[in-house]
Length: 121
Image (cartoon, rainbow, N blue to C red; front, side, top):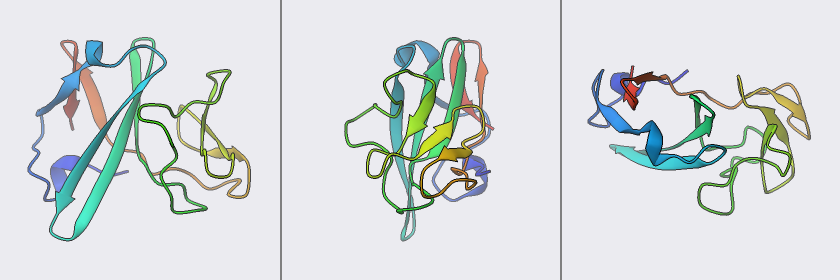
């Protein structure tokens, strides 16, 4: 799990990433942070009143999961999907349940909802 407050991207514990209302239910919001030469592309997927945050990098292909901004779920809305090769990942923990990286996981990002805002932990 990545803690944005622990890497040098200019964010500290309690910093607001966005409001929960900034992300439509069933959609995602993408963020990109730079630390020296490293770039951290993350996304926060909303599912009702919950959010799930991951690094936007498929463990199999090393490519971003999405091809269209904010679109990470497959058509039923049950799984995150790598749009490069179709791998399916559980929303709750990023575990790949189908595809060439079966058993691997997306790298999660530690966030929390507090007072309607998604914040850095």
